[in-house]
Image (tube, rainbow, N blue to C red; front, side):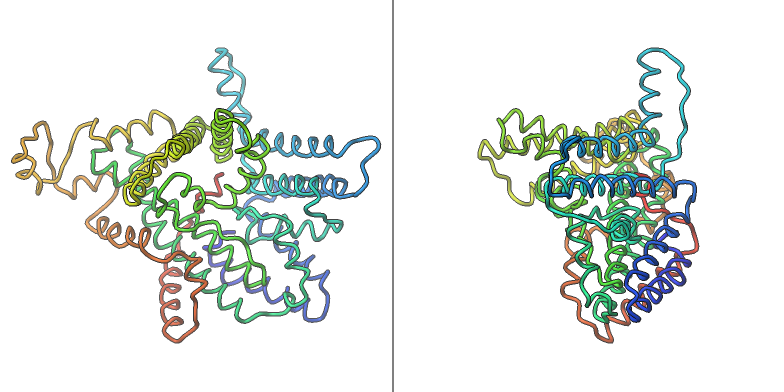
Length: 489
């Protein structure tokens, strides 16, 4: 079931909301949480019920390990460190088996000229997110930062449907205390207003903006080896825009639904394309994943407390793992490597005392992000390289006829010309395509983000009219099936 579907918006969500708060109103809080678990598992099973036992076994296993780690006394037979190791390794192996086995087999076949059959395993929905979330829980339990002795509460923590499928990746200590507050068992009309407000923003981002740019991004990558200079830049920018509005749209909807239940989920984005450095970008993009990578990989490796060379290697390891987390493929490894390398260069630059003008820093950062998203999206390194070559004019130049005389006056030769419509046709675009870019890019770079809009939100008739309009536009676009991009990771 998708957030951007009729059945979720007009059936599942309102029914879940009213049943949950009705049970709370008659003081059946245990029953209300049990219902929330049932609703969340129903939501999860909507795609494929086959993997329901997998998430249930994962929850039971991690709850058992976490409970043991939360006990004050040291275990006589098994130390807490061994318990933690068993828990983390088991979670990682589960993820590796379902997500990476075919990738490993493919590469073993290439290296050894063998012919081992692929497993062709379907990737269980949300396995990357609920695995990382539970690893964080185990580590926090080991550190004595959280504890949970109630299996129902723990199941709510893992399965809470607004954040189950694609995050944000939450900590037990930041979500479960909210369920324990008595005032959160009562309908909060301000939270309802805020939740609907940000849900509509997210819905509009996804179905109106992201899904529109998806047409040009998908067509461009399908024709990766035939793109001209302009078409390749439209393709890359279309995907850069699509990915942000798709994933931040999902997060906004998750936060909005959470607020309906009086649960505040962490924001995952803070205008990432306004970043003036690669470090700044990773403080703004997929914030809860960045937090996980920092707290549970980078810092345990030594973080900044070691020698300079070790810091660089820690950065590289952390971001290569971050790349692999997104998917089993060399494009993801390369994408993680490039971001790790960029952070190393940024650190060296800082150590040398150099500073860039903010605009130049933004320009370099945004273009680096845009180019590396090509690597992230491409089906292969070769496909990514073909598009990047085109972006720098190395696969030939096809320019609009209107620029013919201008380029001739500058002495350029070996340039082909065609109508702008012809250039756009290769990426399934038309004359409306440039208009979409002209409207959307200023939103990315200049407008308030969802977090800022939420904090400044004030209900009024004009606000209600505006959001009724964009909600209506969004609902009209719900006729097709449009999965969120991060469901694939």
